[in-house]
Image (cartoon, rainbow, N blue to C red; front, side, top):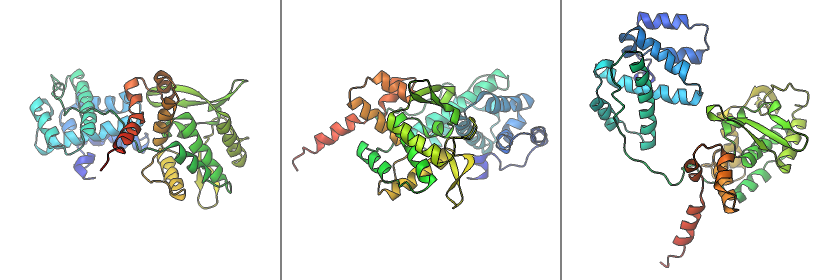
Length: 340
């Protein structure tokens, strides 16, 4: 990534240096986010306050913060190269920026949301009078089906059956993939699981997930998932671990043992890719594919859309419908009948 896109290509001004020194006790990830673009530094202390307020105060989700930070830095770098100061940015200039932006329409919509939100804060802090991105529109985009690569029920079974029972990593991987399949949870939520999140109410076990936007949901654990989880807990020696200990841990080198560090979303994705390759399954499949598979399978079996929506943790049923691949199956059946 070039220096101007990352927002760190220009030498720091005295104001930027002071801000970095004040924030030195923070974690490196936070210190990198507070490095102030030149146009923000030139706009004065109110603009610098708004930058910190927006990225370190308002945005609580790490993934949203990273995406918005990249989008805003990219836009400000575009304006800086043209020597356009913040108060001089017009809706036409914002429109020109998006005309020149060579990314997909969904990505443009994300960029626009990030830029609008940040400029709103600049308006609130009296850095600029009006938000120039407020009236800007991107191309229309409508999706009737999500882009998540498909995995079928049969392929999911094949994947689970292909995992041996030779090491603790095998037990971990089977339990993690089974959790993705039987709870339809996101990989990020599975990575956050702690031993205390495996709850027993006297009748059945459940897993408590901490999802996006602060949502907490408890999903019942079906019998076969409970079995593979218990096998993993025993194989990994997790019975004596503290309740705050992560459920799914990274492996320690080549020794085949588990560390104390929790797996993250990237670790889970790499593990799934590795197991897919070993099982002879398509490499395009991702951890998110299991959510689409679960939604489609439940809808095929007559489960109400509202129940599937709750399982997936969606606020809007229209999002749930993007995971429904039944129409794709019907379309395939239709084209197979072409007589050519």
